Image 1 (cartoon, rainbow, N blue to C red):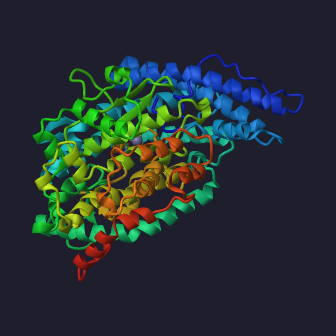
Image 2 (image 1 turned 90 degrees about the vertical axis):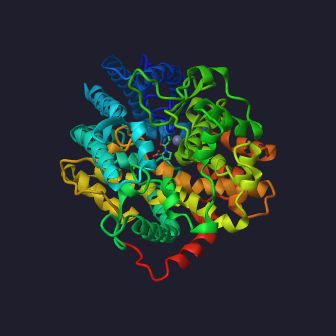
Image 3 (image 1 turned 45 degrees about the vertical axis):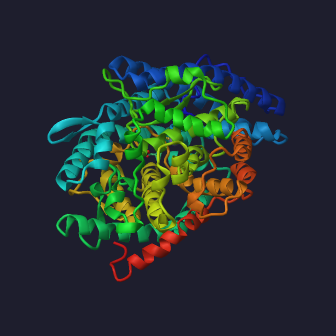
Length: 604
Ligand code: X8Z
Ligand code: ZN
């Protein structure tokens, strides 16, 4: 299964054989050890069946696979909840070994959406989540009045420059996909909150924040602290991008001050803006001069070849080739004859070597990065496959999301020459460094406030601070506050734009991507330092560096066996997650943006 966290499906189902905590006598350390061993064995075995079920339903959506997936999900949740409740009873026992204590905590906090134990609740919860995920997978918007599926509309939002068409796609997607889910989402929230309370958490948001080897409130404060480090950079990019959009589209479409119209940014969710680099590129000589998507197309790359190219990078670091089954079982392109969930994911079906990706790959720059991203999950999964079951996970979920992105930061002009995609004569000269940095910032920096606000919204929904009657207003408020963007048309409480973003119906926590965005720069800088790179950081590619690969593998193979600061220290020497490496990478761009932005309206 997609082992982003120990999810309910990964913790799959079978007979409930856990060692019971005796009602009469106090539990003993030996009983706690046996309980953990039993849980690991049962959950590991049953997780494989659940993962197979989940794979089939995600790659072949029908009413039948929905029904089977819902049933399988409910059984997995029941089993995981049972072990979580049992774990809570042992957790404070004195004299527990380090591993037993850590694993009991992982068992207690490992569910993403817990169901309460009352009869029927897990079935109801699973039916709701399956229905929402499957509706998202089947979702369609329109372009020129004709239906267009999710992966096509995503690509079209990156390529289209006609504001009317952008608006049509944005409104139709959000109206058709998000709005109908509103009722189900409210029910899902209520039931899973009940489940979280039974496990001793205030609500589901509190459960999610508890998975970081630190006090949950301190974790929330850490994310805010990181945001403050990177916010000036985001504000500078926003000011500059708004100016360029105004130059291109005029006041009637994008005003010179205030928020940016979100459908103009080259992405359905305005989360990454790299697709409109052509609009913001520095005039004349500063421009990069190539687009990775165009290079791939010019050289006749097909999706499988793009994945092979990704694999070759990991091989160059010393990681063994992907197994033959990866190529037989992965879904690399969208099947023509059936509905699937196109949103990219990486799977480790047997927790050993049955690695797969599921994508609807397009030959463009976004998907070239996404391939490296997904493969990062797969190589992480394989690196920790000798760990005990409960440690088969990332040091924290941000680590899991950061590995492939770290590798993708190495897709520099010189690397593109090495793999034959770019002619040596077309390598951007040093005077084009600002263009290169700006292209990266449009994806990496633009994402930061989005990466933070998605779970600010969900934390608010789970805590009740954002009421059921205020879902849309709460979403729009955070989009404005953090990203400085507005929808192209007025929204009201019949809408549910949050539901039009995959991770909301699929219940995948999102703070992981915010963490990954800063962690990947920490990892990348460490790798480049290890390789002895002396030039500008953004020109470094650690392709072919076996020593970096060995050190990376040392961190990856730890899985979740130690608190994340230990893992971070293993690779970077530091125990602190921070935005400093990202800020340092973009420092020359920040200085340039500040000059461009002089005298222009700032903020929104
Ligand atoms: O969901 C993903 C990956 C799968 S874990 C494709 N990402 C986030 C998103 O698309 O919203 C990667 C970047 C952020
Ligand atoms: Zn991912």
